[in-house]
Image (cartoon, rainbow, N blue to C red; front, side, top):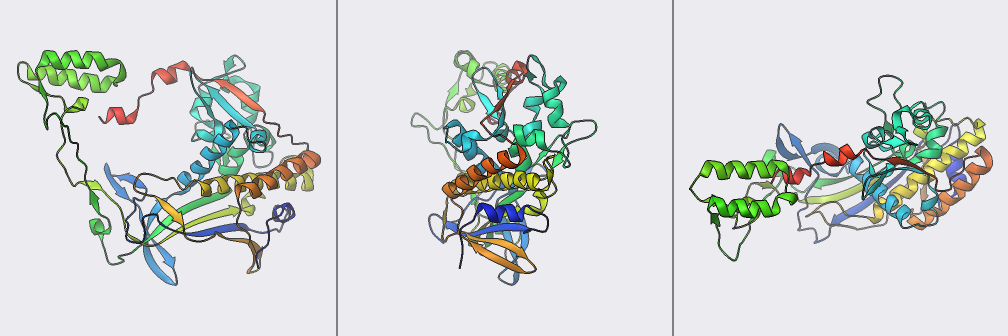
Length: 402
């Protein structure tokens, strides 16, 4: 019989010799039903888009699976939801310390940036009126080690929970592995398929009610382009002007400006049919036990428990947000099967971790860490001013491909 996850269980797991992991596994399904195909995560290999296929051990057999959602994407969904909880001033989430970089009209929290505390946006920014990398505060974060990670715990704990790598530093790089990892895989319905036979192809088309093709003289094309130039990328503008100049007196297709139709084609990656879809998470207490915070054995255990509770808050929010990508709508077919490792081949079933459960554990862990280690989480935010040159150089990749 399963039991509720408790603070005491987490604390015991974060002490020497405690549980190795907590795991959560959930059966998912295509929202439209078993007949539907879903779009897995897409990658680029030798300049060609592709899906990632692997061999996994499923139900006692080696089977081919597609990666539906990888480790980084799974964590990012939980982080995005956690950032939204902070922005919504939810009482527990809003107490989590964070770093924020402010640009002219938008800002980003450390849990919204790919390298978290050591992201390039922070390194290029100013802090306290000086280049961030030259300040004592930022240098203290960069000088953290597993033997003393207190500065990160009090400034950007998400970097300790989900991993961070100060990759550009010449020496003494901080490299913290993620203590929680998740993924979603789909077991292919056709285990005999090879190569392109493993997935379907999909096509697109555009219908213009005015005409399938709109051809303009150079002067008309230039006037329309000039009216929209402020909203287009420099590369798109240059390409269109080059077309106009090359055409001379010949008409120019206005398809690049969204005018005219596009004939149907069948050349884009589609989806895969799956006999099973499995979501899994692993919270590693063994990795958390590598961290020290200068608070003694019991104080350090309380700090690790705080990070474990933060991990659970991320997982619970990620599981609430089954939003992956277009043509990949999923539903839960069962409750998560959650287990706490007890070592020596034993485990304890645990009730599913909801956001309310996770936040209650996190709030208790905050109070205990303050009492035992002097760690105070009061929503403190380390404010950076973003370098305006970064915004000036920002180009939307989708525009570049237009």
